[in-house]
Amino acid sequence: MERASVKQAENKKTDGGILDTVKVVVQALLIALVVRTFLFQPFSIPSGSLIPTLLIGDYLFVSKYSYGYSRYSFPFGLAPFSGRVLASEPQRGDVAVFKLPKDNSTDYIKRVIGLPGDTIQMMDGRLYINGTLVQRERLPDYTSRDLWGREVAVPRYLETLPNGVKHVIIESENDSGYWDNTYVYKVPPGHFFMMGDNRDNSTDSRDENVVGYVPFDNFVGRAEIIFFSIVEGAQGWKVWEWPWTVRWDRLFTRVK
Image (cartoon, helix red, strand yellow):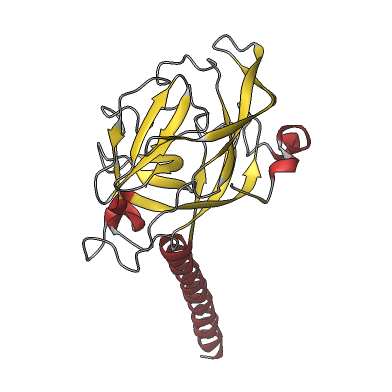
């Protein structure tokens, strides 16, 4: 009887230990879900459309609360409401993640250039907002790579938007790229016009067949900070290569 009692006590202790572990795991998952849904969500940069602001291999946190919450703020778009709650509209110059309007599921990240009611046009590589030329200042060239992987120097500019926000752009095809001359876009109410900082290598609102105007409800959040960055082609799980593959100077820098 004494041995049986000891065995039962051991079984209860084991069962209790497993139950406690399950509780801790469930609580951790719930906390992670709440943080991801309402506060911050991590994203990685797979393309060079925002070079030099964001590089392929950057990992960043996006604040979910910056623009309020829509159904796209929730995993798989599951939400018990329509529209947007606690809404705060994006500001010109924000770098923002949004759901591609064509499928409402693919994540894109671009810079807010046009607000509802604005007119946007590119002429000879220069950006015009509401008919006014956006000022830019030439900076030293940016070292990039062409289609064959060769290093090339491309023009770099500091662009100043009408609200005073300054950001850097590059023009890999100078001012004669495919999207450097467009018709006048008229941003509809409740929509925004998004562009990449890599002006000649960005699929954005200038291409109405792919992106077009982005509804406010499709915004996921604002890019805030780069928390990790690894050179293009490297694998982050190979920690023994980090001394050479991690871009240490980009860690914990704000996205501007």
